[in-house]
Length: 113
Length: 112
Image (tube, each protein chain N blue to C red):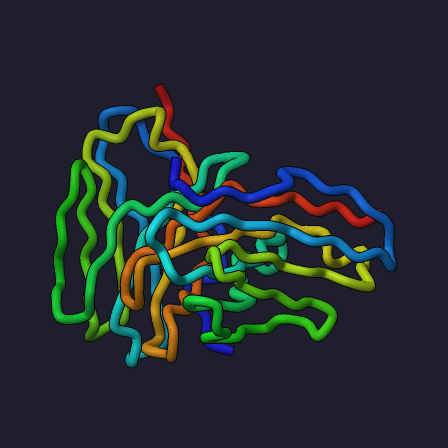
């Protein structure tokens, strides 16, 4: 079936640098997207969301960009800190009944001190 | 802390057995979702309830069932357990549709 990025790549960045985590989605009918952070032993933690009528949304140190033309989502983390080390998942709501989110495979972010 | 509570944190059981996982959603959230996270499948949606009624179903096995009670807590029942059912089971809740899901810290199920 369709998926949102099944691979689990690893991104290694230096503390203080900016991080960019990418996600490709396949369903053009998806209208809501979310980024989650999952630390070891914990559940996914909501970071930021964006609806399909927007192309950019900013939070505290994080920015999500949505490019519907190429079905691409990215999460930018400014001034990456050791506490940002985790697995990051993008998820999409494929405009189904209910609020079922389809998750990608995740990206592991490692921050080097 | 997401406000979603899951019990137990860990569960070890044998093949063929049945277990019940429990979830209390965040205060005020009417929707409860169950997800399974395994190494080879990532986070897979199982089922959603909204105010006591089943709302959406994912790739949930027939051996698995769930319900949401009047006080909005939910239980996921897994029966005739197989080794492949070993995974993390997460519950999440949300206030409504197109709103973020807030996840609990999961139940780690090990089937031996």
